[in-house]
Length: 188
Image (cartoon, rainbow, N blue to C red; front, side):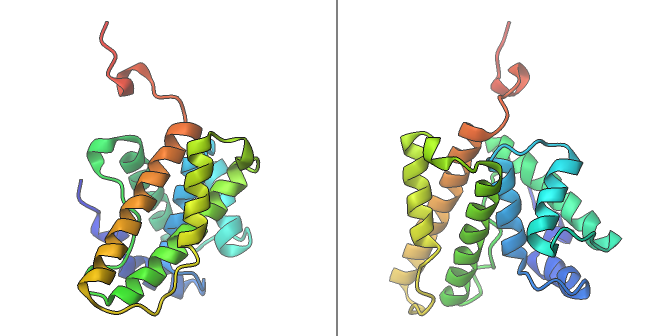
């Protein structure tokens, strides 16, 4: 599933800047994914209120930005709830230097963990696998940004990105809604 052009990082960044919101699009996406993976109620009122609290101190967004955020939510939910759609963290394109992408990944992971913790305040009660993944994500959030632009750093970045993706999917499988029979592929 191709990402709609309106949900590209540069479009979201321009909309956030126009609204005087000093967050990077990866932070918004990370928080949104954390809320979804934490099992937040999927009504617009619930997820939107929590996201607005994180990104704009609970204040309403300009209509054009709210529309983009709604579109981002729908796109993200579709991708994370159906493995065929190919969920992955929103991160800068590979043309960007590795250090920029590593910093963005760190911001995404920090925001993901924040969103997850809001919905799941008792993460210590999660399964051992989820607790281990969260511990590892916390370490990724602290990664150094001063990395060389070489093949080794590129490979490490790709590995961390894949880990963040799999961690989000694991959290969604544990805390997200139970799949309906049609989603689970049950045949009667």
